[in-house]
Image (cartoon, rainbow over all chains, first blue to last red; front, top):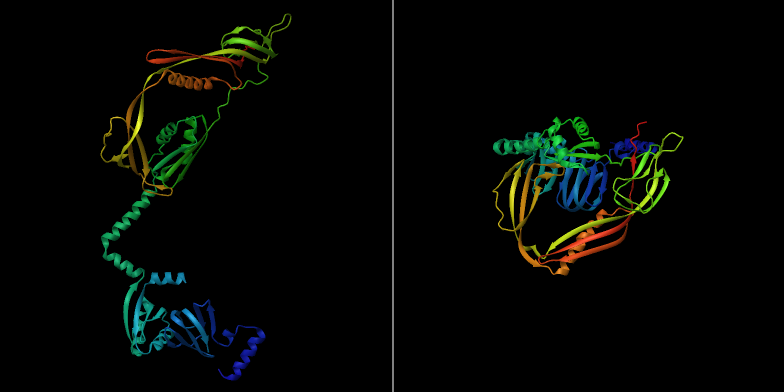
Length: 90
Length: 395
């Protein structure tokens, strides 16, 4: 996606109040409590360790840190991670 | 999530251990090939364990090759493997199946019948009727025609006003409602006499309707007409009226009681033995034992040992407890015997007295003899003795 089309899509989604994760194909991160985090629209796992998981997304590399991290389930468009989550950062 | 787990269980899955340096690449390739893996755990720096559906396992081999990793099945789980196991243990499977089928079949029979709501009618009588009509212990539930049996009971026992049969689990409950016995009422338009219910001396007679046949102070016998409803006057036709009157009379009540001075009392020694027996349907299993004591009282208890709520099965544990008793001879003093006599006499007197009776005089005479004490009570009572009786008129 080049910058121009991205800009157009962003303004379009702003104007029509469409969910950005669908229109722009960006990742949607949902944190439930401090034990479960779900990442939608991911682009694959880059690194998996018990204390850190790095996930590729369209807007950069998402790093989830914590301890005893497990991948509860993994699908083409969604990853569910459980464990004690300390931080989520790009 | 539980639905997905159940689905996985039904389809069967394997717990695998993947070892290699490019674990992340392995996961990514699996998902891009549409292989669903879940519960991924890091075991060590180079290995993970994960769960994978059975049908995807063969497709995994190629990915393993391309990522230079090794794969190993730790455990197979799920229904397909369970069934495979069961096939191997045929006898066990068969016996479990038999048990389940057996319990299911047992549940479709009646194993216990209970009669509730009876007062004057003996539950035994009702039991006999329903047994005749086919509701017995050990009958299939489907065979019972509840309405037909209810109707049959009502026809055979006219003193019942309602019968309901309820089948719950393996228990049938027969609930009955008895008709209330009402005294024969004589309506105000029917002619009647008033007669004496007891013999005595009339204390006061107050005639409201009808002709008085006796006067105050008259001695009357039981059944004698006190007030007649047949009015005979000269020059007019004989009329029949509904008599109304209050008749109070002095009546006498007598009773006697004898009490031996030598009394034998049974005392509990505290020693007891209990025998157990198993009862299946009507058959008692176990040895019939004789009571171990010469003097005892017996307490028998039956308990259903297999029951799940309303599902009761015909296996009963019968426990028979024998409490040893010992004879204790006791000699009463004359006073003690008198007291006991008096208590008994008073108790019986209470049962005899009607509601509005007044005890005018009470006298107890004692006759002390060698071996016993005799007591005689005589009571003078003031009570109402008038009872209505329909005139069998031929008009």
